[in-house]
Figure (cartoon, rainbow, N blue to C red):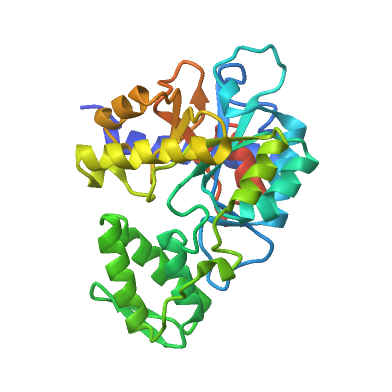
Length: 339
């Protein structure tokens, strides 16, 4: 019998990995020891960039100050390239990075775009086309709004109670409720969110465009960013629906409609796609075949890690940047030492 069983070896590996991360972070040398600089691409996933912190923290909302700090670091250390250049071989001494946004929030234009222009950084936005140019917003923003503005002291969700008298309690409720809602179809999510509002003694806003953190892109913003030459647009389904929850015909409609509308909105053929939620179980070979048939040439996931130039172009890994990502953690992420 071996002195070390599999579990012991696994623990030892994790401890060694944590120690390595601490050493790299302490000496601030992640850029020097970047993982396989020539064959990897660090693709960053953002959703929202806000001018001020939310009432209730949400992982998808990064503050403008943190975002600029991150973009400044990328600009100094990386060659920031468009998504369409990922598979183009170019000689460069720097590692490569790609900046992406999912969903299509107005703050991508209002807050993030001026920063990206300042650093002349190309980026991509994957649009949920039924939300763009609408007064609606992504469902997780509706949860955030409810928990931000309710005056109720506690809420129960699926038998679990949450104390809403503290910011921490509200954030814990948001995380739990969002995780639970992801498994449902859009109409079911909306019905459950309506019940949440009732339990919190709130009315859902008829127009989320009045709330800058939740507002979605309009045509003017899309056009202005496109004219800068910095942005590429892709599709993210029509209703921001996790594809594995749908039938084949429903999936085809979600994907095809979003690709068609992105082409209409931008005046450019849509060639890029992002899977909603983007985990391994959230899409299948059927969905890959659909996007191939419809002319998509690259598709990004939310599977965490550095992308590689020889990866399947329809299963591209990215690195999620959250509201809690410190600059030290960010450096470890983008250089391949932390997923």
